Amino acid sequence: MKNAEQLSIHIVLIGSIALMIGCEPTKLLPDEQADTSEPISANDDSGASDYTDTTDGMDANDSVDGDDTNDGMDAVDGVDGLDAVSVSDTVATLTFLVDDSANKTYTAEDGLAWKGSFSFDEDDNIVTFDGAWSGPFVPLWDDGPRSDGGHEPEDQIAGDSVWSVAVNVGSPLSDTVFEYGAIRNSIDGSDGEWIWATDNGTFTVPAYSEETIAVQGLTIEAHGWIDARISIDTSEIDPSFMLEPPQFVEVKSSAWGWSEQPMTDDGSMDAIPNDGIYSVTLGTITGPDTELPNNGLLNPGALPEFVFVLDDIEYKVLGVPPAEEGGARCEVRLAGEWIELDVQNQPDGDQNTYVVIPWAPLEETMGVNFVLDDSANQTYDISDGLAVKGSFSYASNTRSMTYDADWNGPFAPLHDDGPWTEGGHEPIGATANDHIWGLTAWIPSESTDIYEYGMVRDYADGSSGEWIWTGDNGTFTVGPGATMVDPPGLTLEPHGTINLRLELDTNALDDPFAEVTLSQIQVKGSAWGWSLITLADDGLNGDLTAGDGVYTFVLSLYAGKHDGLLAAGDVAEFVFVINDEEYKVGDTKLTGGLSAWSDANSTGSDTCVTKTAACEPKSIYTAAQQNNNPAVSI
Image (tube, rainbow, N blue to C red; front, side, top):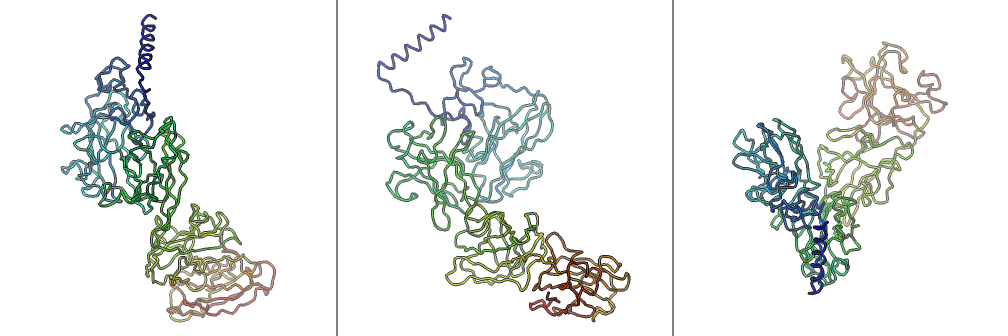
């Protein structure tokens, strides 16, 4: 107790002396304990007093533990200067990569490196556990596998913009967890700028391991096309942080690797000069020929974080950066206009300020609104693959269409998730989940091409889907002064009550099919989405006599999930397919052996299944469209 009492007296005396000589109370720095932008305060001077830092778990430089001599090594085992991890005579191999193949902006001069709770011996190519993250860190390479004289894992290729490394680690006597991230501008293993996008990564080296451990790396997303302007209104700075306007205003952000960037109030990057609102514009400071050539504009859905630095101190109150009430602002450029976003704080962790980047079209494009209305029958859902197919290729990330006369695709999926201005894909004014499927796609504003299109179901990337469009192909082009195009859509009419019966008598086929050896008879038609139905001459499914050469299709027996019976006024097109070849000569239909019936004047569908008198013959004519399909008018 005597020592404790003496210590208390000393503390009181020191505080009294400070008051007597008029010392200003020390302003404590904000607690940085979970700031992933600068995760290790043991290695830098940007954070809180080190004894409060729980990001890396190290108490380096704390002066209160009694055993620390500023080397940061006593946090694991409590013995100053000793490595807490004992190793065996075996080694494991660690592999790590940063994939820049989407942008290809990094070079060897950019100093990509793997930073973590280890130090790296370049001569022996081995890392050793170091809880203080004191380095040296591990350079990344793009020079091919170690077996070919490079530094990368065996499955890597030189010059592919995937930067990686394979190093050894002494196998521990017990399972050991390492933390890590990635940096750039590392020189000879020095520290650099933190570019890791999430919380610190971790990996475990098992005891006595001799295995290769592929540590989860970083894939750098392709740069986007949406510019952002981050601002701080200095008139709204929280008075508990700062009373006078700051002299130096900077911001750091995950959008560009957490380096501190100066903000201006001179009109060069901000909206109004000298109004006390300082800004930085992403498109000005990133991209080729800027100070941040490895960064670019944002993609829709991105969640850029940012922290303001005022007079060299991170702007945080009780460890939390400010949102809108503390003066934080963020805008994005949409269709040529700056639109303000909702600035929020993360709910946990470092609680950094962030925004959600909304959808925005590419510059110099205009929208094309496609609509498919299934509200009458409501049979389609997202698994059915509704899409627009046409003379274009569609890029889902930008939602843009590039003209392609050969219809090679990819094509454009339809959605029922609400308007594109509110986080969906549909035209403005659409309602989510109303069974009206839509898409606003984007084409060059100055386009002079005439696009053709129709609609399909069961579409997935790389497939064609089943054609459900009726009539001639749709077309659209850009008219003078147009800002949006609304081409005709497809309305799926309510299913009716009228059955349809089709027959093909193979004994009466027209040339050149009359002498063909038959192996397969199929039929496709507009009433069932043009899917191919294989028929049999077996006396079943409406076929009256087995083996008589007459093949029969009855709509009610083959209708699928999205198909129904016909209604008065409908036109049902169809084509028989013989041995995988349409029963046509060129685009001209053949009529030999074709017959059709419907039961429009009866009740129910059984009359055409059994072909009673109530199933009445129908005339077959040529559909009034470019492919001259056989058709029946109901």
